[in-house]
Image (cartoon, rainbow, N blue to C red; front, side, top):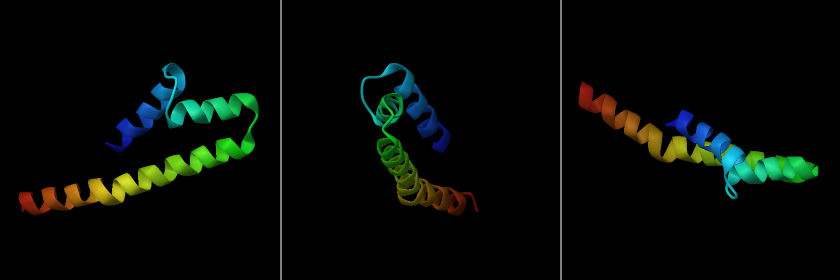
Length: 67
């Protein structure tokens, strides 16, 4: 799931007209260092929240189910 999120950002950067990946590349292209930094931080925070709020509880549930 985490890999899928990273791949979707790359796909947005290459073929979309919106989203975090697109904005990251757009800010880089126009030379906006602050924008690149801000979008990168947002992406990292999004991945951390996704991991802590959704993926870890699912992992704990699946491990309890298996034992």
